Length: 307
Ligand SMILES: Nc1nc2c(ncn2[C@@H]2O[C@H](COP(=O)(O)OP(=O)(O)OP(=O)(O)O)[C@@H](O)[C@H]2O)c(=O)[nH]1
Ligand SMILES: [Mg+2]
Image (tube, rainbow, N blue to C red; front, side, top):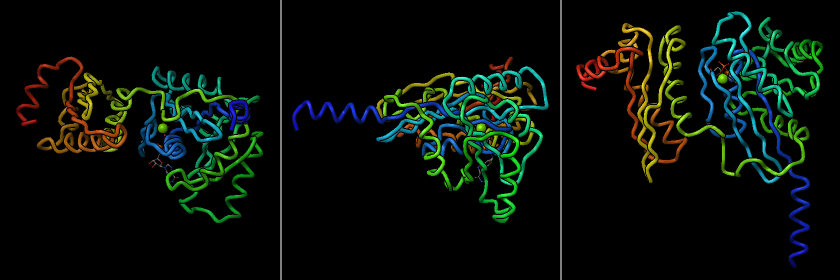
């Protein structure tokens, strides 16, 4: 093949290539982060049974020969409790909806609540919105009931399309991608092919620990906590990562640490395994608990526990 033919072929390919942004929105706990992770085939956004697991916008990038999909996972839109944290979360969502090419509005199969409706009212009028009915694996309805449910929701907003999926089990995801693709603008890719998120490894490491706190602590506690990645060193074949769990009150510390350090050990072991999978190398991880004010005491406390 001569160079001219080659260049013509290349520009023809570039001409058909698509690349764009897709926001994933919905009330807390409908499965937005699970959906994004399964769409891109990598776990970059944390998930749990508890509402408001996602606190920050996280992108997930999927690239193939024909298109690059840049998904933006958002915190579950809060409609009831007004406080500073929720205001910030909601602002994040509104901003995310602003600059994208497509919006995925995620709801749960057979459940359309006032909170869902409140989010729906904020959906953009001039950007295509696809209704994603998630968790169909729960099998809580026959086909006729599910269709009637979907018709009801579609009557309330002018959706560009609809797809029933199970994010958790990967059902309907290829069809959803196919629905999204025509709405992405023709453009060359914006991110390198191998990139799966625009978030740093350091940020993702902190998020993974936060996920384990959400999964292994009781109802209220994880909301009152934060994590701080104090050190993050990328070696050639091992990463050294030091993360502090910040709690408000002294009496919360033993709950995170658990009897004989059991709970903290479980949290850090699981976090380390997830990190090794995500970063593709060995990880040395140290997690400890810190009351925001009294960090010197913590060292003593952990020593007493033999950690
Ligand atoms: N059965 C079933 N469960 C699912 C499915 N998708 C998500 N879940 C579960 O729903 C819960 C919430 O999932 P997340 O992905 O964290 O939900 P989210 O919408 O990101 O939640 P926030 O970030 O808190 O707004 C988790 O326990 C998931 O395992 C699904 O397709 N089927
Ligand atoms: Mg989430």
